[in-house]
Length: 307
Ligand code: HMG
Ligand code: MG
Image (tube, rainbow, N blue to C red; front, side, top):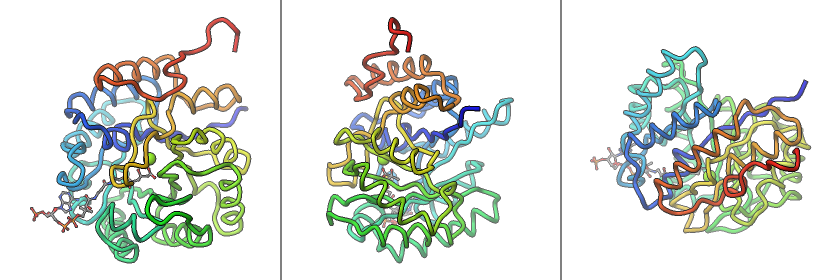
């Protein structure tokens, strides 16, 4: 049997947070519906962050509630989630009824300060409180570690430090840690090197990879991760977005269409219908009024060569 790969769709959150055009709740809801109709099973619907910091995430509470209510009626449940930076955000997460949230930390002090306005130690103190509230409310918690392969402000990031942070996050009680190449600098050699270091310390079923295609290495990095036994990846429809606090250095999350095309071609299952996903990409591109970087979105599916 072909192996299933988990894809977490981050376009509505990590994608739109980096766009100048602010999407209404209603347009984001249309995007979510397009994605679920394409068979996407894990979707970040928003972020319970300060609207002063990320105005694009306004209305995340309303989107979260819509997603929960849609799930109640659906025969096939979707794993909807949202980002939470602090207890204030967690209160909104609880109100939304979402059954999963993500905490997001950094591998460097500079990015932690720029992104969530606190030191790394302070962030873990906040995370502890969030996880306690999540447990009380039966909400699953995922964790992000950004700048895991290099930092926009500090440059090289020690792999030993990343390993320690992954262990620290898992000790908090998150079920999966997503390692972010936030500024798209990683190469397959670096990915293999980090996973070799993590291998003796962490079960790979608890890891996901979050690559950016800023320098064209995202799919090569996915391949390197698959070879090492990682089967969970984040990606963004159309290749939308990046982090607004990464000093302008964080364009291009890996496009979901490109990831799905490669995985299906290699015999992996994702549960996603590529034709429908490309249609959703087309709709978003029109709404944005600028082109998106997804290779497969632009080229379409090959029709004549029997692939
Ligand atoms: P702060 O300014 O230090 O917050 O921001 P504060 O605690 O001093 O409070 C100031 C005001 O904000 C208060 O309101 C709070 O109530 C309010 P006032 O009394 O002045 O009216 N406030 C909030 N409002 C709504 N929701 C909240 C919230 N918290 C406080 N949760 C804070 C600290 C963490 C809130 C801010 O820094 C923030 O929102 N940061 C989020 C930035 C963000 O979303 N960045 C993008 C994430 S992308 C990423 O990290 C990478 C990733 O995608 C992976 C990858 O690509 O590698 C995950
Ligand atoms: Mg990203």
